[in-house]
Length: 299
Image 1 (cartoon, rainbow, N blue to C red):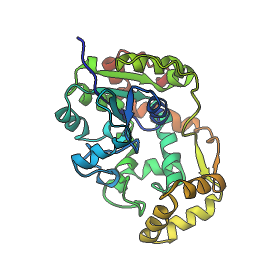
Image 2 (spheres, rainbow, N blue to C red):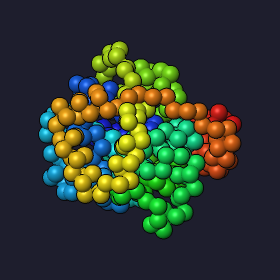
Image 3 (cartoon, rainbow, N blue to C red):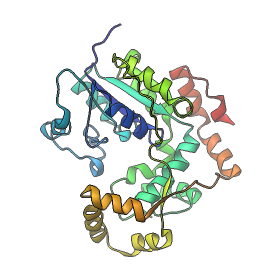
């Protein structure tokens, strides 16, 4: 079945390479990519991260490259987890192409926790303790003062790719969905990139530069940052964050002087074993739905 593709969505998952793929696709001459990358417009159940409240506002996110001859795309990683986003996308444009990037949920969640901690959306520095807080947080307890991403702190739900893909495929036909494994993308970004262009019915632009994007980062003064987040009222933190990230010069200064790249410590074996068992059934479901062999995720 041949489908004329005019719009595509990278719907997730989080910490699975979506930022890198979006950055590569943004520079393709046949693609008009949203600014910012993650509008989350169709995720009505994630109001804290939506940057457009109306369709007209959503369309403005593409104004810098408006061209009817291009393929329009965006990459909101919360869509895969959202209870309504995929359905809303289908109602908006049932011919859309959907791209899903998948990663071993154990590795993904460990990376996600570090990312949320860096961004200030998570306040529990120990990953295993954060995992253990899910039940309390579901009741509204032990939550960070920044409420924007509280749903994402339900790590067990975020990592259930099998359930999320099952719902996705109940809405969109299989031939309108492309699944990408994170490990394969990292090993051969050029091959993955070309496969995405074929999926979108676009000609190759012969890209050769596939620089790393969104490496693990930490604040240079972690303890001070932790105290800042725990003590300072949210209203003050929100105002300061807005001031810092309002323009590219302050963002550059922040990243230059207060941020460092850092390898995460290896996830303890006992924790990895526990989480692998936690997601075993869901991984088997994902294998069945995608046709991938995910044996390496089970050990």
